[in-house]
Image (cartoon, rainbow, N blue to C red; front, side, top):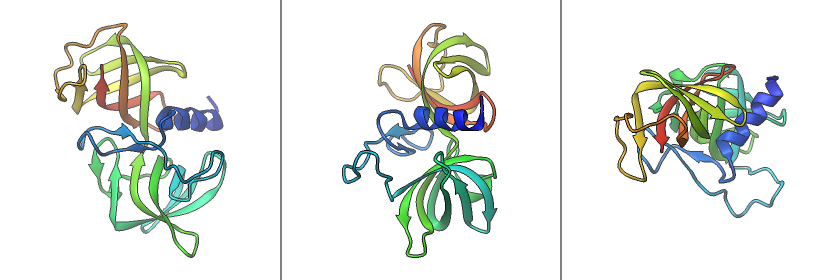
Amino acid sequence: MTELDRRQFLARTALGSAGVIAATGLGPLAAEAVAAKGDVAPGERDPNFAEGKILSIDGTTLVVSSSDLLLQRIQVTAGTTIWKLHETSFDDVRVDDRLYARGVPAQDGTFLAERIWVNIVNLHVALAGIGADRLQLDHPGGRLVGHVVPDTVAVYSLGPPTRDLSRLRVGMHAQVVGAWHPDTDDVDLATIYA
């Protein structure tokens, strides 16, 4: 898969049809889709949204190349919340990570980030294989490996989150939210909605 294909794949799977992924609403281990703001016309860029691949980190400023090759400077502040499989600190952000961010543009063109989601994916998959520490995930974009980590939870039929994954079955369709390992077909799983 080429870099552009991978970016388009990630943008489609992370954004889906619902809009931006928010790491809120279901607690620190999950994320949910939130509707796009109604004040942005179709086809126009949302000035309060940024996405792309991190090219460099200078202090608390990220230089990011968006999926449409726009370069943008994203400023992380003391009030910025960062999600990378769970809420984390700026120290966990790396060059080559992909991000989605909400914030506001500053006068100088810098984007002031309020929230950043690093490597987040929101995928509709079929479970093709189940192991003790990983799930084989069939997705229209290809086969992925979902890694079960200590904080992975499942939500069955809109019930409460549980660490019990024993009810997962091969062939079951699920929605998974997790953190992608850049340039691989691996995803650390935060939440499995089955």
